[in-house]
Image (cartoon, rainbow, N blue to C red):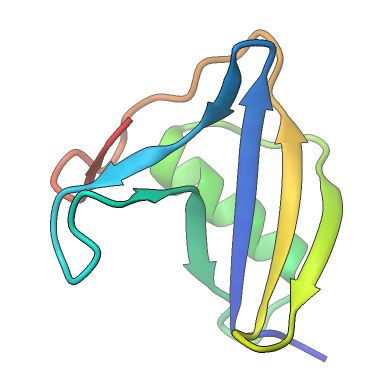
Length: 94
């Protein structure tokens, strides 16, 4: 079964790495990497969206939970010594 959306929560010893939305209905809200599944497995989408939004290449991640009410999987990833880059500056700020 393929879910519609995925989320990945990246963290390190300093805490969770999040974005603040600049546009849309959710302006000024906090968010993590989020993407549509395109009928692909969620692990593939997570790697693609994380690379696109932060420049990080994820080597490992851990499944956390599926939210069936909103049709998405949540994964977590310890990014340790890596700092994500700001790749979509018109959409969100780190």
